[in-house]
Amino acid sequence: MIMKIKQLSIVIFTLFLFSCEGGFDKSLISNTEKLISPNGEYTLCSYHVASPMAFGSGLSVINIFKSDEKFDFTDRDILRFGKALPFWIKWKDNKTLTVKCLMAGDGLQKHQPYKTDVIAWKEWIFEVEYYSMYSSGATGYFSFEDYSIDKNKIKFKSKSDSLVFNKDEVQFSLDSNHIYVKEFKTVGFNNKLGLSFSHYDLTAKGSFNQKFIQGEQPFVRIKP
Image 1 (cartoon, rainbow, N blue to C red):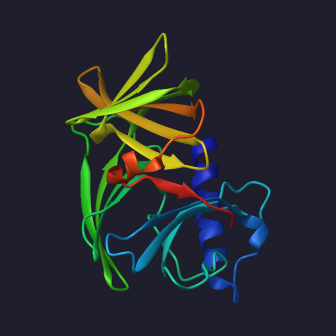
Image 2: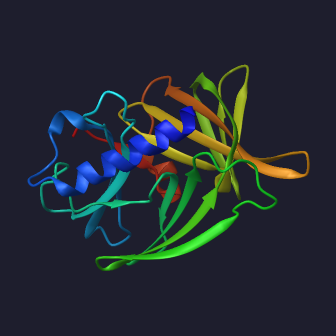
């Protein structure tokens, strides 16, 4: 019953979203991040649009702007993935992006991803993979003093401990001295599969050069 109410609220909010004239109320915008295209010409922005209704949960959406123009997060000409939540986005080239999405309420599946799609939006192509979730843990905090990259692994080290991530299983986002890590792994239960998520807030002890991680296309957190 709760799931049906939640799905109904998404439908109502979506109808509201695209039937109103004018832009979004800026107070509804949060979790804004950007990811610049390989040639620097365009910037993809990912953000959350809260529902103006008390029982709504809002939507996670993306938009793409020219990098030399001001980003208008109130613009309603956005791309969304239905009830799916994008959790991993990379530029494949300047016109094609790969997106991994988490589908709400679909349960564990025999394969992950269990569905794929290709979406043409404006002048870009989105190659989308859909996954279902097994579990999600609380945020872990870690202070690092050094880091290293070895083939497909990235290691963050303190004097007494270390964290190692597989490049194919993380999405990074940055601010001035934090690295936020969203890690996902495929796990099985009763012969079915889902993704298990872990979240980390990494803090550098002292200054660090963010260029070392630029090859992984990290998002950069920005103000709406």
